[in-house]
Amino acid sequence: MTVFAIVNVGNPLAVEAALVANFPGDFLQLSPTEWLVAARGVTAKDVSDKLGISEGKSNGIVFTTAGYFGRAPNNVWEWIGVKIAQA
Image 1 (cartoon, rainbow, N blue to C red):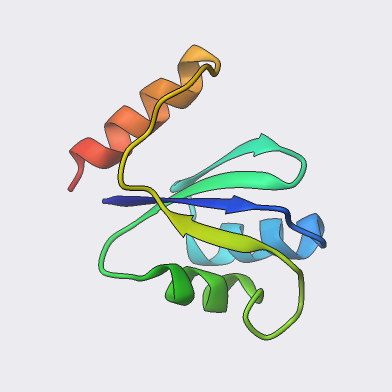
Image 2 (image 1 turned 180 degrees about the horizontal axis):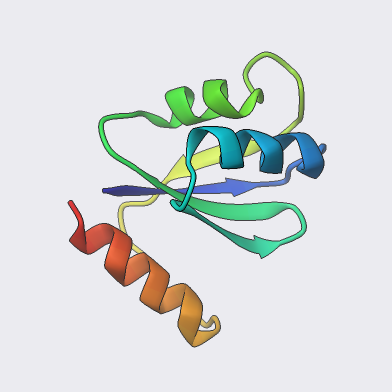
């Protein structure tokens, strides 16, 4: 799977509802306005479209992750590892 980062979300309630509807079990909230999403066969634009960001229901930026590094709680690294392994 590809992991996407969704950041700088202006309407987190709308984005969270869209995540539940479109990516059940495949997203992890990092902060009130940031999530990771795992999906197959979609682009960053497709994710943005499904979350309503493209059409203006919320501001936000969707990135495709090509690599990752940093500090975060163990559950974040475990989630990323599992999702990327499901490629």
